[in-house]
Image (cartoon, rainbow, N blue to C red; front, side, top):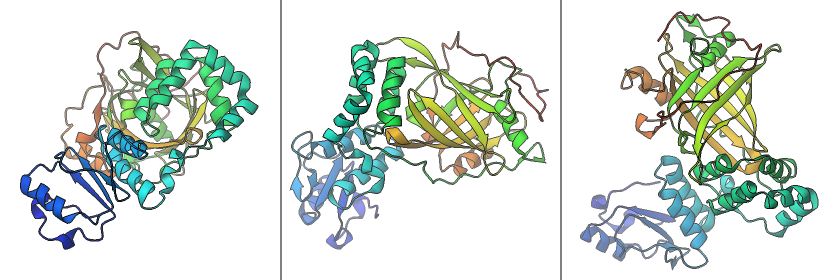
Length: 395
């Protein structure tokens, strides 16, 4: 990839042989004239926030936005760009490459499956389909999901959280998880490779201490941590996020329960809660999470990137996939005991922790932690908390 400013364009050789030219925020008259004169040989051009004189071209043909057989590509790219984050900008480029230059394996789930999907649903999940269609919330969930772009995880997860119901769970479990009627697949992203912290309070990090860091403030407070901000808009849009980490009754069992508020598409505020099983990774500070979320299994790899000795803040990174839904994702959460930014948020330690995840602080989405009363907290009777670290610190 070559990145050029409009002022640095001097001769045609700078753009010769390009398969794709993306034009961003070009409005200068001289630059517009130069591009109009020198880009005739480039088969794929897509313009964002630029002069209307600069037109989209796909497969060598001019394309009007929202029109023609290419509209699905135009709409997918435009919708992704309007979400204004780096992952979606990368997606914009990949969609055009996949459609007009060469197949992109990670976008295989965008391809329509046709009548094979319908046949699979009818033959294997007839009762679940009928029950869903007869249920108001389940029907709304399907309509909502159908209106989302295939890659808009923000829209998709908000639909699920807004209209979740036992019948939606049964539908998803049968159609997606058990029978994979949509023929989707996704793997946990392998990058970025994030290393966990290696010491805590001047001692080597062990598996027991790492679990204690997740348990965090639970015991002094009714929760382990509250999320201040995160890097994945699909999840960090939800206000009032509480994290509950605890040890179960059986040996080595460990659980994570996030509690968060959802403002549904109908304008109602409701609390949601999930339950993840957690097992240790190969090294202390690495963990594997698994959850059945509305009928679909998600598996995630979590890393404790950094937690301060006084537990004033922590940074956790995750990479995950809901294979049956064809979605993979990455993210990170900045946590503190009260959901407020730490006093040293501009400090070198936090910057260094974010750098390990390939994240800049301006990429974080702030979580709304106002109006969070009556959260359904609490953990099962007989659960245990810290084994190694002391919670002598109070707030």
